[in-house]
Length: 531
Image (cartoon, rainbow, N blue to C red; front, side, top):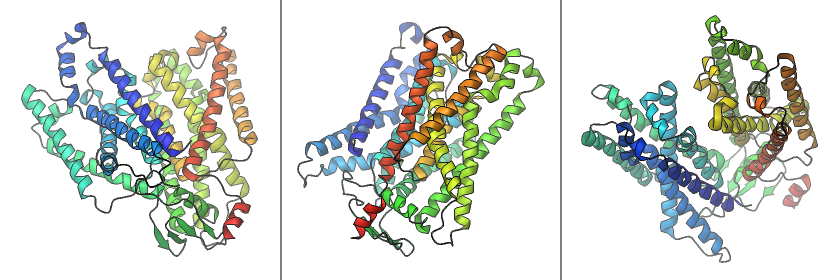
């Protein structure tokens, strides 16, 4: 499946997700519910929320993207065909000026306030109209949508950003005008936080902060693009990169075919594959050192985040809290939860990764230096066989059950120990962590998956042993859902589904790696390029 098909799949998912969510929320607008004045006011101004503007523009962008890609496929036999310029320009400008910065603006402003004090941006009465799942679709899922487009549609930074910045500024000013107009018209602030800061110095400071954050989010897209799709350049350490051809100085000769990008961006090749070549040619300083430092940043962040969270959770286990028998049992068995095993894996992997990067930097003056075989093998196997599939399993299973019925997986009494922030660190932040690693650490699919799958199976069997031993020892299931399933056919079926999900998640990583880095070239293929 090519990038263009994956992009189109992303557009269809975006449209289906937002349309379904909109219709689902609309079904809650009953006469009885609208008798509440707060709900009635909320429904009357729902189109004035920046969140609503953002997902509407995502839908508009998806329609434009579908049109462009459909025209490209339809005219694939015509080599000279180009998508109409007004469509291409609209697509590029809309993404750069609105979709990317606005999407990250919504997420980075909403969730910090939500976790600090939900009443500042999301009053409790809204729960009667917007479910938890709808909330995440509007404030969380918009990020993967924007990132997916960035990964599937290689772009280049424009020579002049004046037009893009102007459109972004007009869009932002227009929204602020609507925000203030709503207050003048209805004496009502869409976001309650403005009720507290209005008339104080904090209002202009908040406005300035939002504009500053918007421009930071805007600039971040070009940083990401530069790392994913490096521009043409000449570098004495890496040889010459020109029109998609790279000449290395280590004897591999010239690697041709498909590193350039057409003006429309549809036949764009995997420039990132150049990074992989350089990676296996000896950690070329010009590009790979930057990726190495970014990986190290990820490892340090991972360790800081999980260690800090562990200390914080430990501080919450006070004598008063432990008087609750359920909390006391949770405290005694917390290390047996699969989530804890997963973030401990994250910490171990971060330490191994840091060790590898430090050795590489320390030995950068040694020509053809390579990491110790066992250390590199341990790092690669741990990520591929355990960390990636386990992280996606925790995220998928936990949030699916939590949004359906939290008592099945995360009973209310655990809130005495784990705050929403701690919950997200253990069940949400683990996914961006592994995505960061897979984007910055070049990987190629092994010829045989036996070793990796064997490690995964053994790991899960060991955990299953601990899981069942806990029931035998204490007479309790770590996860309440198994109390309902035990003794029925659904118990073994659930175990089977979990193993199948793990294998699916394991396989997904190689599809992503292939899309980013392509296929590893054998020595014979490299030799042919030289000839």
